[in-house]
Image: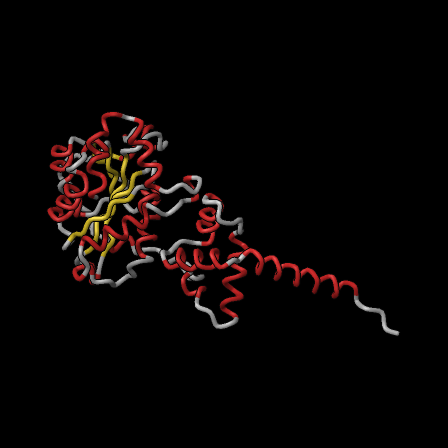
Length: 286
């Protein structure tokens, strides 16, 4: 009479238990929510937090990955909705970027101040350009450092006039929330003095080839690339469509915010101060 291998039996029982746990937690509502949020470019961590905070279910992101993998093995498509899907991050060729050889003094990021550096209050923004097809057009992206609230505006070319117009469209209705703006050394920000004067704000410049000094904006641009891959011709997309993506980003929970959304954090800060009354009225138009 052969003696059963207890280790193998215990291992199989453990696998069976895990399968039962995955199956029992993934109710119809959880499965539907998972699909909906994946299509909005959320990741499993964000979806897991959303389910818990809204009292829908307690499903860890590890279980979600198991469920997605099981779906893939049975011919499903959920894995195709995962951000990056295992693709290695490719750094930008920063040295190909045109750097502005300035003739007037610019404010250095070193002089920006503690309130902006420590993300103490809203109103300190980072700005950048997401380039379109052929590096000829793009979108201006502006992200509040504290709340991660994002504003997207279309630019028809890489000129400084187009970028100035984009910034004015983004903030002219409520200049009170623009205390500082930190940008890189691209030629599109050459009209910084005019922008500073018209919006009564301070513009600071990061060091050349130092994207980590504007890490919040860089990360947001990565999120935007999930909607628009490299090589997208932005001239064929209306600003109204970009604003829809802006709303999706602002209503997406972030781990760095305790899984609150940028809109929740931003609006909470606005409500704390009466000077933002006009902003509260106009913010719905952004």
